[in-house]
Image (tube, rainbow, N blue to C red; front, side, top):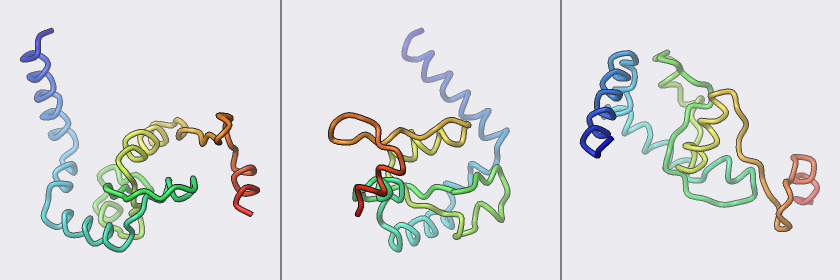
Length: 122
């Protein structure tokens, strides 16, 4: 497949998603842009990174509970979580699809479970 075919197929796929999921347009609205900016101004750090002991500037407002087109849930500020792009695009997407987020790894290269993480905080 050449580049033009690839671009055409991506455009067609995006058009199908917009038609099947009209709520996707909400993300481009002036209202969403205002709400998103306000949330990031008030909560500038990625929550998932913070839980891992890392400070990272958030660039995405994630819905803690997937709204699946429910307008009330979409606009509910209590449902917003600040995320950095990697956490949103990797971890949150995995979790939404029934998988697990990336595992936290310690300086020795071994996974750290939640018990170890709490122990290391003290």
